[in-house]
Every structure is written in C-alpha cells, then in structure tokens.
Length: 208
Length: 193
Image 1: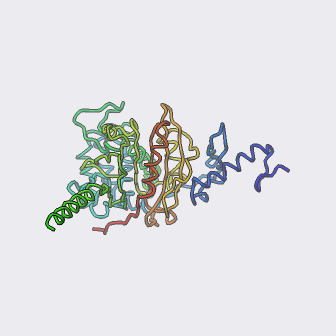
Image 2: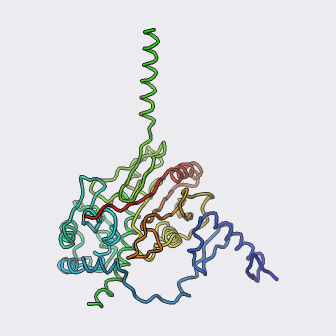
Image 3: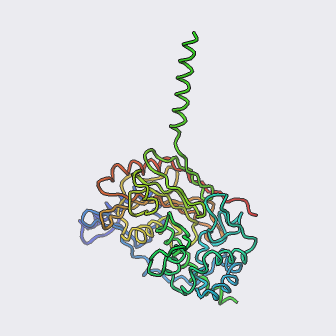
C-alpha cells in the first residue's frame, strides 16, 4: 500500500515529495504548524516548496460578528466620522479603516493621546492629542479632508490621497503624505483596516 | 615616570574614543516595544517627525540613501510592526500568507533554514519576484492578547523583511540573520490617560 508517513498516496513519488516538504516546512514555520489550515499543504514543484491552500472554500461561512473592540470603536467614532464624511463625499467605512493604526482605538499611543488615526509622529515633539473622538475626527479631516474629498468608496483613490497622490497615483504638489517611509506596507495596512470596517459598519448600523 | 603616565593616558583616551565610536546605533520604538542594534554597514533611515513610526528601515547599500524613500527600489531590511487587529492577519500563518501574496505578489516558498527569532514563535517564507528580486519574510507576534478582539492571539504583528538581489542573497542574509539574532520585541501598553 502506498502509505507515506501515515497518509495514503496513489502516486508514491508524489507522496514522498509532499511528506518531505511537510517535514522541511517545520524548519521554517517554527511552532506555528498548528495554525495551518487543515487543507493546506506544501508540495515540491520544480524543486520549489510551494504552499497550497485549500481552506476557504471548504469551510462553513462565518456569520457576521462584531467584536467587542469594533463595537466600542464604532460606538465612539462612527457618528463623528459619518457627519464629516458626508460633507467630504467619502465613505465613512473607509475613513474608519485608518483606525487600524491604533488597533481601532484600543492600543499603543492612542491610550495616552486619544489619536486613533496614527497621526501621532515618531517623536514626542509631534504628538497629536485629542480630548475626544469628535475632536480626533475633526483633526483628521482638518489635515486630510481636502485631499480625500470626493473619493467616495474608492479605497485606492482614498489611500492615494492620504499619500499625497491623485487617483491615478501621481504626486500632487503641496499635499501631505501620511507615510512616506513605508508606502507599501502602510497601504496594505490601511487596506486591511478598510476591509475590517466594511464588514463591521453594516453590522453596527443594523444594531441601531 | 611622567612620560609613562602620559602614554598611558593617551592610550586610555584612544581606547575610550574607540569605544564611543564603536558603540552600535540602537533603534528603539516604545509603542511597539522594538529594540534593535543597527548592524554595521547599513543605513538606518530616519523616520519623519510627523509620521507614525512602525519600525526601522535599513538600506543595505549605504551609498543608496535614496532607498529610504523607495523601499522596493533597493536592497533593504525592514521591520514593520502593527497592531494585530483584523481577521485576515491574526495568526502567524495568515500573516505570512498575506505578506507573500499582498506585498510580494507571489506564493510563499520555503525560506532559507534557521530564520527565526530566539524565544519567539515565528514563520518564514520566500518569494522570487519578477525583476530579479527576492523577498524573504519572517513574521512573529508578541504582546498581551486583547480579549475584546481575540484572546488567543498576541496584540502586535511584526514582519521582518529582506528585499534583495540573487547575487547579494548570501551577503544580505548575514545582515538579516544579525537582525533576527539581536532584535528584542516586548510591547507594553502605555498607561491610559
């Protein structure tokens, strides 16, 4: 029987390659193997170990859920953001996504400054301090409102605007840049925050 | 006697000066709990005062200072810290997968051996990108979990990233390993207002 390890493979050579790759992976993914999806596996293709993921389609969909953290954040920030977002013609969920900078008003310098949007600099000389969520939201729009105006639900145009660029990505003279040193990672971070808020905001609104 | 004392004093002065100049530059980030002695021969990019500091960016070729403003245009090692705040990146596996697909636009391949951070759970992957670039990621997590989000995962995600050329891989891996060996990650929330 073509069992390799404790698994059955129709093609023994393939099976050996998969098991070798699994073994090799444990070197790379130290102590993290229990987090791998059940259907995920490494295979060797042309001498390269490649992670194949087969997880999402097989899992039951997770029902919509609002974490206690997101609930607290939206309870504090949604109304203030929605009011100014309407004025500037931008989707409030996109603006709220920038709150990932502070773990959605739960972590880091937010706890001492009240700035949920990461406008606080790396130096204590450039701390943005807010006495309330309303003031913090006002600070955000005072700084970037004119740049994000009219970006609507276009997350790419919104992030471009925060980075001092027009919707096609061209630098606009005189515009502020949110994160000049880490543009790639920062864009990805904000995109994740927007994704989180695009799921959370409808749930928040449905509770009202 | 006097001459001997003068020579001794001169030697001590030189030794003291040498010790001062040999002292490594230390990057510190209180918010994300990062302490890193900057490896010799690299350029630590300054973080603009008005911008949120997510961790150190180091250009591997000191003559390419412009690399500080063009992260993917030169050989770099960087550490990017952010709060573990969304489902898509809340575990090591998801975080690594996200780096490979979103940043490097490729599937994770097996990383070089023994890329790890001492005493921490970590995962590593490699992407061979177009344009003859290689990206190597080591991801780890630390910090007290937030039960209001997920009590089973640490509160801060760290991505340690080497971006290099095939012909410089071995050389740059030595710097990357030095970073992995010496970095300290211990985030502590500041007191609430």
